[in-house]
Length: 276
Image 1 (cartoon, helix red, strand yellow):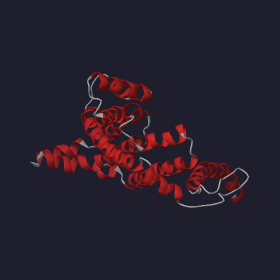
Image 2 (spheres, rainbow, N blue to C red):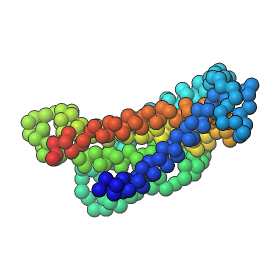
Image 3 (tube, one colour):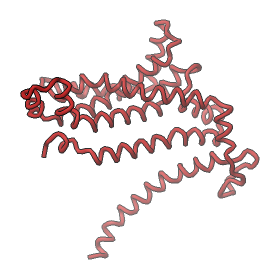
Image 4 (cartoon, rainbow, N blue to C red):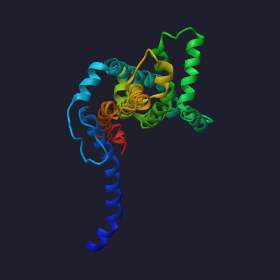
């Protein structure tokens, strides 16, 4: 019995091992490349860099556009997350709380921006920007483009959250004389909280990693971490500098995804809204 159980578990263990190596090897290579000192060249015939230092990190911090890129990225991403959330709320409320003819069709139409390639969206917004004479407002153009691009994620997540709200709780709060704000806090918020948090985190991560719109619309005045990474890897082909930027971009997002995963596991919309 034990032997059979081990045989059944073997494919799962092999799959877990492959996934672990698939994630661990690129991350390890990025860390090693970021620590390569210019005084020693890392060649394929050596397992580890001959000279390890933090020179690349100091160089990128002091002699590149990393500081303004970080400021731009971490200003744009949270702003895009909040704007996208606010824009998605009315549509998600209608799709989640009302039944009407063609509802499923509307849900599909709301997902259409995901079909359009990001470079097409970027060229579209860039064209509008120059035609309206608003070339100097690149931040707001990228912000609007990100909101449109990531709106389907927010609508889909929030629609599911609104569907978790129990109408009898809303009616009970109204019958007891609760104000609209109190009704929202008591009846809506417990079910919406996981969806709102998930929307903010997912749009934040998507926005901070987005390249096409930030590059086409923002160049050359507005630099983000992904566009700076492209300049190091795509133009200059400097692996060590690109590795530093890749880690700066990836590590915070991995931490945020782990936080999101833990939050979603601990939050049960059905229980918090009184179902079950």
